[in-house]
Length: 153
Image (tube, rainbow, N blue to C red; front, side):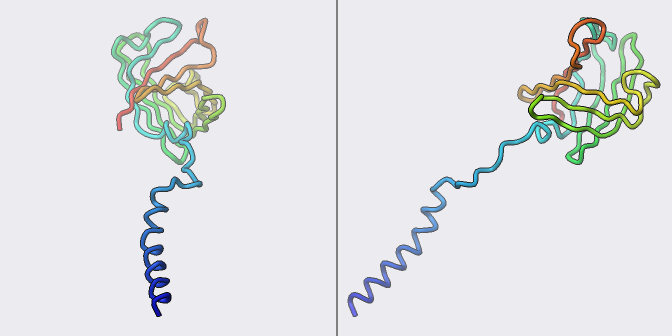
């Protein structure tokens, strides 16, 4: 009878402490690293626009960019300089390996310009804390465009 009682007590102790030991042991199934797209999703406020080392949207351009988890975007840039304000929207895809985003423009206020409907805009993206740098793949000449955004949410 004593042996049976010791066995029951040992089983109870094991059942009590086993769940605690599992909590202290790291899981073999670690959560996957966040993708670039996960980091991009949200509302971004425009900080600056640089085109070929000029600021055609002025020293203090205003703008918002929304990227949702479903792959939809909208961009609005209000100029305080010589360039016309622009707005465009559509869908986007992300290439983690290339650290790039391709915006498939569905509609815009830009006519036949950069944000023209039906155009695909591939941009290199870089994240540093809550700051997002978006630049076209041609970083020299008249096509060199860099936009700096700050996370709004």
